[in-house]
Length: 259
Image (tube, rainbow, N blue to C red):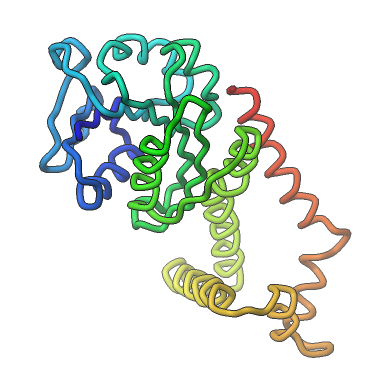
C-alpha cells in the first residue's frame, strides 16, 4: 500500500512516526517546511516531484485554510479505489468533495497526545467510503491512540471542541494552577512538579476507578476541611461550569465556521 501525506508539521509528523511502526504501507510526504522527516519516509517537494504516481490514500495534513490551494495539485494522484483522509479540523468532507469530486473521504480528528500514542481520534466517513477505506482509517487512528467512530460531521465538530482542542484547555488550566502554587511561595520547578504529579495522579485514579468523578471529589473532602474550602471557591456562582461550557462552545462555533 502506498500512502501520500500532504503536509508534515508537528501533528502530521507525530502521527507519521506512529504510522511507520504500525501501518503496513510505504509513506511519501510532501514537506516544504524544512522539518526533518522520519527515517523510511520518501520526501517530495510537491506534486510534480511524484511523477504522476498513484496512491491508495492521500492524507491531508495541512491547515484548513490551506486546503483549497494545496489539494487540487494532488487530485490526479489518487488510485482508482483509493480514499482521502483528512486530519484538518473543521474542513468538512463536503468541502473536500468540492475539490476532489465524488470520492471516498474520511476525516480523523486527533489531538496533541498523538505525540505519545495517547490521542483521542474522532472518525467520520462519507457515503462513498467502503469497508476497506474505513479499516485503513481505523488502523491510522489506532496507531496513535483510541478511535471513536461518529455518525455525523456535526458530532465530529463537537468532539473537536471537547477532545481535539481539549489538551489546550488542560495546559492552560495547568499553567494557572502552577502560577497559583508559585504565588504560595514555591519555586517554579517545585510548583510544576507538585501540580503535574497531583493532576497526573488524580486523572489516573479517575481512569482506573468505576466511581463517578463527583464521588471521587467528595472522597477528598471532609466537612469544613481544606479541600472543601478550596472547592467552594472553585464552584462559587457556578462560574467554573459556565466558563468551561463557554470555552467548548466557542471552539465548536469556530469548527462550524471552518466547514
